[in-house]
Image 1 (tube, rainbow, N blue to C red):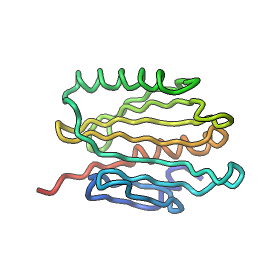
Image 2 (cartoon, helix red, strand yellow; image 1 turned 90 degrees about the vertical axis):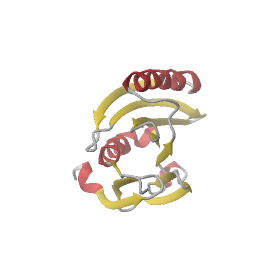
Image 3 (cartoon, one colour; image 1 turned 30 degrees about the vertical axis):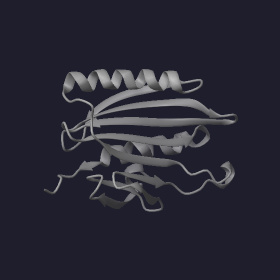
Image 4 (cartoon, rainbow, N blue to C red; image 1 turned 135 degrees about the vertical axis):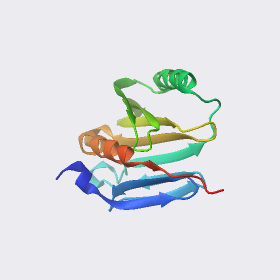
Length: 164
């Protein structure tokens, strides 16, 4: 089955100002009016661990292409410094359908003894009022299943216009 064929549920959130496609067996929790987290099904072989995909709307500290480039470079360095046994898998830049630029950092790190995590951190700068921080995480044992799915979910994001 094509990974995009697994994206069967449409989710829109008026506070986070996004719509996104996710697998139908994922659940969602609103962490705050500006943040949602999706949970994949529990993995019985991994102590019922659930991979997660979070989207948070924030106000950026600045704006513009040069600022975004500097911020993204610094974000990769912050990950390298804060994550034990950090391994950079790749960095990707691509536009969403709304033409907002996505900077995605794919990496692994030692989250806890016996728990290696494979993750993506994506940054999206929209304007001087909207900035998105997206974090998706899975255990490295199931990364080959979930990282392509995270990529498809990330690329499905549509930015909604605020209501005034």
